[in-house]
Length: 75
Image 1 (cartoon, rainbow, N blue to C red):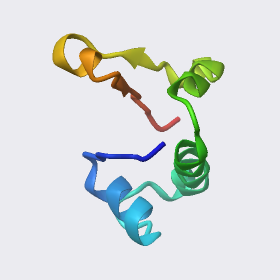
Image 2 (cartoon, rainbow, N blue to C red; image 1 turned 180 degrees about the vertical axis):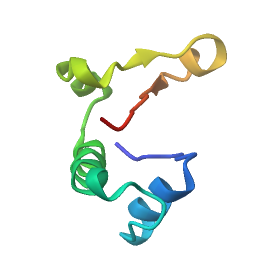
Image 3 (cartoon, rainbow, N blue to C red; image 1 turned 30 degrees about the vertical axis):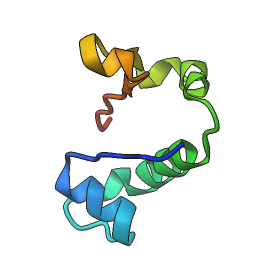
Image 4 (tube, rainbow, N blue to C red; image 1 turned 90 degrees about the horizontal axis):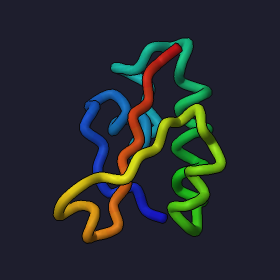
């Protein structure tokens, strides 16, 4: 699967440039692992195996496209 959009500037920088500026230092390792998992996924259903990620299907137009949302919080 390909990550198509990252809204948070610090997370986007971490993903694209492997630069942790703008991301809490205590979350960098965890975020790198999460991004690597997302990059390596073959099927969106693999996210359902991780209930702590609280994945949910989007509604309306996005749902018709097969999109899912992942909301992650530090902690």
